Length: 217
Image (cartoon, rainbow, N blue to C red; front, side, top):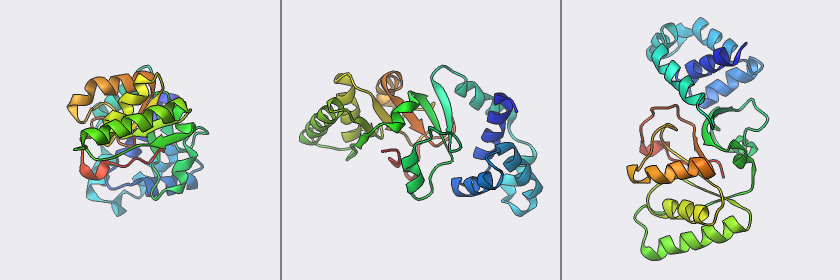
């Protein structure tokens, strides 16, 4: 199977309503890592699935999938799949590990030693100063600073790592093509250029409170 067809199958599966990462991982293991077989199985069992999943599997939004694949084909963009050797091994130990990650930037950073610095969005000046100091020293000591691109502590940690000339990873709760909060648009571009933006959500996914988790570090 060529790469385009494989990505097409992955995006159909990842966007199937009601099909979480646990269910996809289980089916993927049974199918020997072949997502095309998983999609075929889902279609065979469509009548047992959520009505929204039935409708999607019967007639996927090809324009949406085409846009997903177009994003993935941009330089520096990648769908990092759990079937690949460089998928972050630390994710296998968390509850409900993602089946794939959308990455903009250097995916190899996810295999390096990381230090997560996260905290309050409404942090005090002292809090942001401390976060910056910790991030700078840890970054210069060789750790990749990982945070969530949120306002406050997260932003301060990312900024400090970048100002120290070191990479940083932002695990975001939106699709990889969106920036939240909007004030961090420039910061997100710098992170993608000098580190990596990582999301388990497909392009176009809006911010939601239950999407936020720093699972990479």
